[in-house]
Length: 235
Image (cartoon, rainbow, N blue to C red):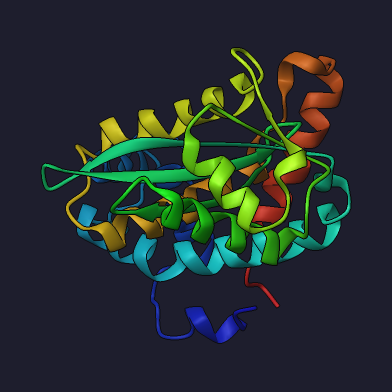
């Protein structure tokens, strides 16, 4: 966890930095959109400053969120995993973003690879299991590399495939796709991996499944999420 000294040499208050980073990661906004929104609140910063803040503090905030959530959900998220991959263009070249979510849509892991094969699937599943243990069920599509990777891990019997079984993870790709369009693609594989990891953690933090709860419950959980965000790296 980052100490308060992280903000020591910044003239801008931590509250403004947290707000700028949240706006950029959580919503489908460009750097210049965030600059304009902050200007409407009387905060005069350039879009390059927002870029620096996001690069400096985004991974730190995400790591703190992830640390807390992994401790809370480690046993709970083992029931069922939904695993899928989507292609993402980086400088005109196709790369693959592998993602896993639990049965409630909590993003568990996201990594980027250059290829879509058994080796990439094995790398992803090993990293997923190292952090979260082994799930009781793993839902995938019929891509052969998943079965080959799970066979090597000794978990073939846990795999489930079906036409509509993996809708949970396929729908979870949508917020990332909206952010991808706002950012006008990615220019480096490293920046894609960095943003995917940070975006997943922030999405988990603010995702309240509002369609499944009453308005009063949603307001309480939203206020709690904002309160926790404002406390990141505060001590």
